[in-house]
Length: 65
Image (cartoon, rainbow, N blue to C red; front, side, top):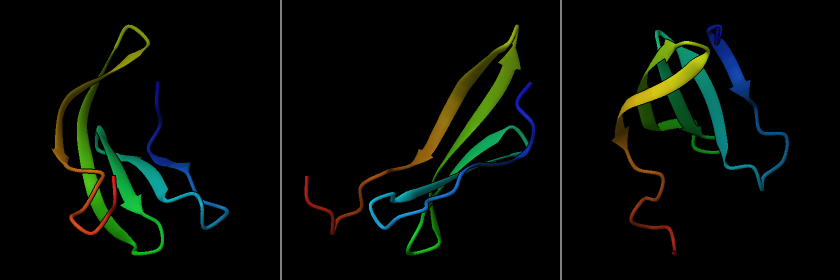
């Protein structure tokens, strides 16, 4: 079972994302902007976390490829 809370907290500027889990949703926050960019609705079945849908994108228009 994946419990609600912090999954990853950036410790350096190179780490761009903080990741949280709340209400069956993965939440990806751009660390230095403190802004949610992506959410992913999930369901847990038989010890597996399944992503059902994703909203947002990891690259904004100002990022280079």
